[in-house]
Image (cartoon, rainbow, N blue to C red):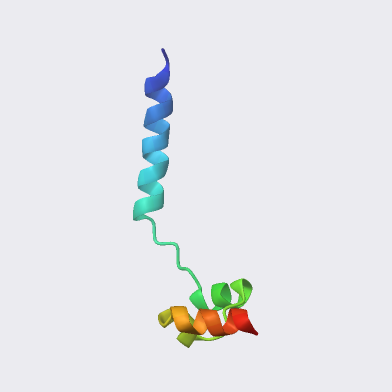
Length: 56
């Protein structure tokens, strides 16, 4: 019993997260995560490139 109020709160929070504009600064996020370049994000290493890096 009492689950209705908790579920309503979860639904409210989920809606807020889904429909709110968060204004994310992607450049700052990329720097914080240590991404080297946009090329790495768009074109992940192929299997042959991964094997050659492991061999080093």
